[in-house]
Image 1 (spheres, rainbow, N blue to C red):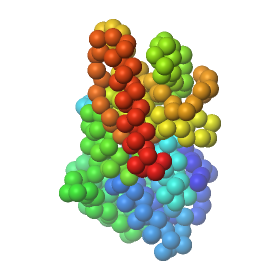
Image 2 (image 1 turned 30 degrees about the vertical axis):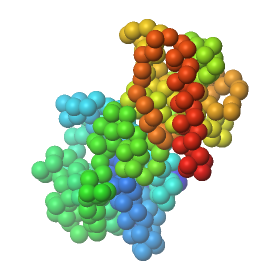
Image 3 (image 1 turned 60 degrees about the vertical axis):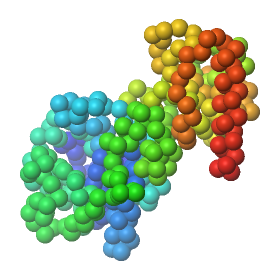
Length: 315
């Protein structure tokens, strides 16, 4: 897959000359609803024997216009992670547009002319709620008037799972509430974050449970406080483990939130490694124990529970 970064106003020489089918969306999380859009676009591209292109943004519009977003900006996917998911879904070209003030000031007609027609889109595929400007002026119902019959339009309906709308908003709420299990059901895959392994307090080693302390990308959302069944990718290989997101309240109050992962059957130093973490299952909340002995007993039980969980998955 080719990734093309566009900064408004972009240079036309950066746009491949061939016609494409173009999927539109922010695609935060590339969840099941987004996958439905891209799958439909892939079908259109195959039918027309054209490459499939998709357009997203390098950051959320809320970075430029904070008043539009009340939840803060913590992405479900980095641009790199989004690109990897798009490639897996068969996207041939990914346009990553820099959402700047000058881009935001485009009229709906300018957006259509410069970011659909000028990208050689023969057909556009987007979700029913896609907007490209003010919602009452730049929605899917009004897209035909701006298109002026220069490209076809395919609108993908709302995606429901067990009667619930699959949305990035709900997934963010699930993660905030530590419910990675439900978030994963909406994503269609296990939620993943990346981070750098850094030195911590080394307390886990003294307890018999050495941990990798992972410094996560501050722009990417991490699950809420709790104990989780995870897999961690180190140097191309996945390892099972148990992760703690919390403040280590047994050892003091008002401590910072950290991500610590005890990797099963693993005994190597990995400081400085960039790792990926897949969040499989929420096990329990953080508990303030009376002392280290009670904590160690609970950690042994957590390990048994998580190993049993993975065994049931045949992983």
